[in-house]
Image (cartoon, rainbow, N blue to C red; front, side):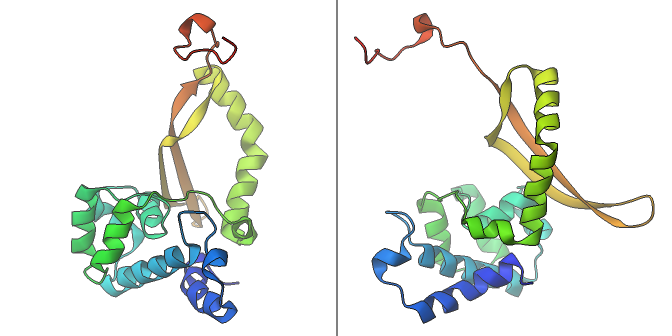
Length: 194
């Protein structure tokens, strides 16, 4: 079984064997999946060349380890302040790649194939298995609403279990967003029925 990092690094070579047309290489009208995969490969190589883990990179950037990974994988936009620190941390990252990380708006979707990767599938399975219980507890503690995935922090770490086994800890920290009663008096947009 190959990991996500290995797959991302092999994607440009695999895609070149297929020789997609420019239109076929674009999953979205404004972004090239091939360009993003190639940039991701270069950034992961720069991270490896710098000898940094995601935890190391996160500490130096002042972000969570998950956010550091999202930046390199093209799933989050790089701010100018963080870009300056990233350039220091990853001297092998090209200025063009760092500039692109700041100027492009990331496509935050995912390819359904990722669900076949065991770590991703098991995380998805855990969320779906415990989903109703999580929803019930959120509603009981916060009211009728949802957890934001935009005003959101995610951090991944490990702990040691009582039998000495290594255990994974994933923390989701999202702002609570209450559902509202859609009162017409509070709606500031003109009704399309008028």
